[in-house]
Length: 292
Length: 240
Image 1 (cartoon, rainbow over the protein chains, first blue to last red):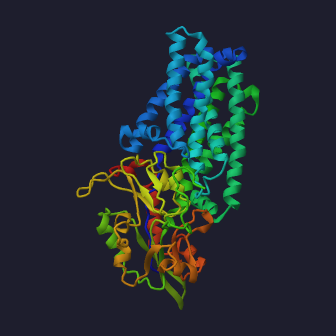
Image 2: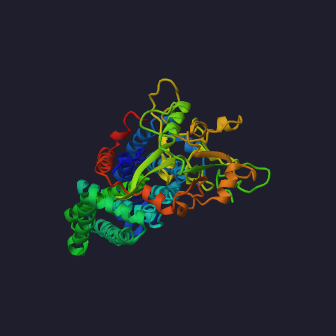
Image 3: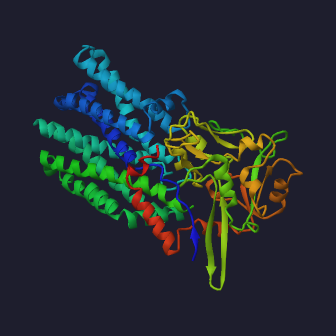
């Protein structure tokens, strides 16, 4: 048997899955940090973690910038999608939103701590939270619009990325609350509810993913085969068991799940899953066409 | 209807050209002269290709056949790479070419992800003779030659006249005649990209088999090595 084929490089590697994970977490951190000023009421319980949450979002954006530069090769290239904006590309929209999101974080922090501009807090919280949650949305859309890659070209991809970001951002805020010792009952109730809902939704979406890969087109099934043979540990152990089943089990009973240590443990487990599922989806979408 | 930078398909539009290629697989002998000509025309670096010829043995003994499949950018009428490019670096020319503006390309590789034909690659940034590097590159149907009345380099050098290039809109042209009168197939028609490289002779089954996972031990080992070495970003070290 003689065969000669060739492999062009896989377009996206680990730096992208790290970026997808981090920027989504930053978006949800911002949304939770600004919730006391946006909603008030019970969300006032989150006030103690507001400043660290904002700073965390800013630090994560600061980490993401060099990641993107590393990926693109040159710093100036980050500006090109804005200068030469192309409306049919989610990456163009994402570049614009990323800049605006960063401005919202800085603006909110300034208005709160230095500018004494209480009137700006609510608008910045609304706009910034929408922009923050548009970060995972655009990363999912960036995959979804590749209509010829069947593993990616599904409308639930951006939904899943957004849900994963909600869980990992909530987990990070829970960790901050635990470290700061601000684990009041109201804080735990809010974080537990959001985390449980997002992990449960991830479970449902994961089942959808499995079914569509198992019984989908030839390309989907090939993606499934590659995932199981090359990335079995990542998808089954780290995503499904550690990232979904374990936190679901820990959070299922509210009386147990609202204990700070349990909540943080479930959060960290869900963060591992949130990263791994992105990693394997990124790979599974690309590899089936390598043989082509 | 045009979306983004996609020029409207010019096939069948009076007064407009629609460049296309026909590959007659009955004539391809797998000599790779087209690959060499393309490499020479553009100084295509080692490890990447604008065009190549895929080889695979098909069938079961004693009914076997060595099949050659020249591959290049399909210059689709509905190119997903153009839609997804965030900087308008890649665009659809009104005569059918899908071209690349190197000065705008940020090497985000979205177009590589979008292309179902693996027709794009990243040029290394450390090239010596040609300075264009660290950007995505692809076949251009030799637009610079065609606009000067020549045919693409691969077509010029093809020993068996397997590759035929011309204006699909010219009713007297060879390409028009071949596409009209012969049984041709395109690659992955189900993807909706409307590719403009037509293959004569094979049943769609054969083109599908050509793109199936590797069968031989050596090819499988190559593929597995590729997976192993591409899990992390170290693969891109030195490329961009």
